[in-house]
Length: 120
Length: 205
Image (cartoon, rainbow over all chains, first blue to last red; front, side, top):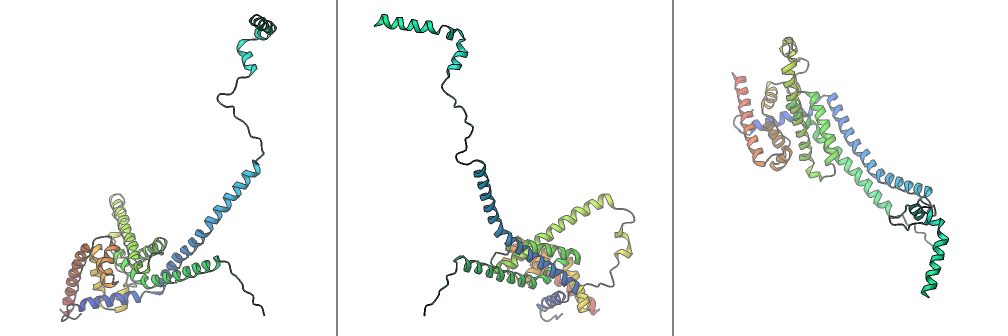
């Protein structure tokens, strides 16, 4: 260390640090090299993944769409769901009024004809 | 005589350009990490006082840097790499603090290795990188003086004056203000100068 120059100790310190970094043993340098290669390999594999993933996703979507079309072709009958306000069938009316209505059906027809005749 | 022209698909040049750019980027990354790895290891070794721990932390930092920042402009790589490394070192300090708290509370026994003078004796076969190279007490004194500094002061000194980052890049790497970097650096310089001058005086006596 040179006392005449106030910055010389700093230059000495830097030089010694440089020397220490350059004099690392072979085993340490080998491990550093492996660490670096592994980090870069990670990037390479990620790059490949980045290209293949969208392609694989698109292929899967297409395959799913084809499978759905194969199972349910456009003309395939599907189960229908009754609308909330569907028209009431005769059977349902019969269920509500009972079987007597059908037993007196001829009487109601005659009564209807009589009313038409008297009105006309 | 008729000429045949071949029309290449439009995507081919684009793919080739991209792969060439990737290859160039890989080479630049490799060169950058190669240039920086030794100093990064020494910095981490000074912080952890362990070659093995330092190697693990530098490897982690390389992975983190490549994963997150490899696509950033090359001018920013140094500060980003040291930012990742500084983060790893801080994590290591935190883990060690928690571990030492637990071991200090529950696991300390009378035959603890810390009390064993044979275990604590310096390894004569491994005098450390500085001493091994320079073979001088000055190199060992510098190592000791740097290890004795608080972490933030040591990082400010090493990043700014050894690695050569400017104040702004050092602040970005250390995640602090430029004013803090100047304060840490000023204190580090004063402490180092005092320690190394004391060592010099001891040598002269």
